Length: 300
Image (cartoon, rainbow, N blue to C red; front, side):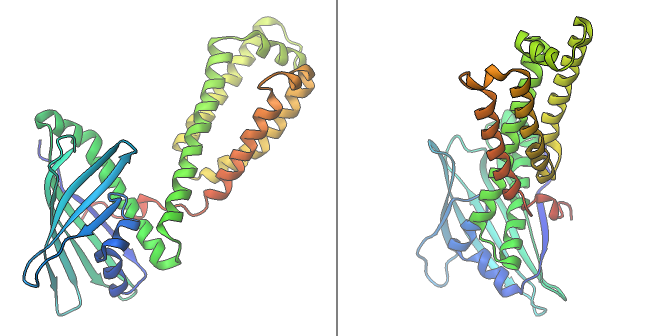
């Protein structure tokens, strides 16, 4: 199962020297490139290729370590530059065994076109190739493109990569959390459980017969599930956080009106919804101008 090499291209409104320094300096490189936690150059003589080691912390208990070799740089007369790379790891659990690639820098009328292409051999035989094709390669290609956009925003707007990644993962982490909350509360107590407390609160607001009350509760549950799914797929998260900032206060007031005694219960709707409002505020302010892999070209 032969896979296409990973290709990522982006245009950066910065001069070629700034892009070169940010990508060739190991301390700067590891700041913006999501694929590396650290890069360490090893001592070398003038006529030797630059060897280095790298680390990528996946979890507190799992770190992938590998080696790399810069096999050469090339500067054309028109100012175009390129650098080639050979990399790999001897760790048995790494999805990658060994690979090669290059970076290319092209001066534009305004800024620099920065691109990469690389390929590698997958670990774990045939099973590893299937995993690579459907899981790992799409993820590492996306991570490369996201990293390129973080670099672009760093050089163009000055926001540090650490700050960009903090906002990015905060926003998407909160979106996943809220998606779980909406889907769970729509699916479990309303659609599946048909919970008596849900029915009682709904009946106090809408005096309907049992069949209509059940239909309304299921309809509300479906709406909550769909909103949870929307949080996962809709790109402009700020709009959804803003909508939650309008919905949660109304839900809190409605809960107190329909069931005043609930306000003194443990895990009551007042404290629960206030927590959701605070988290929505964090998501609203963190979701401005997030880096995105979609700003890159992924095909030559």
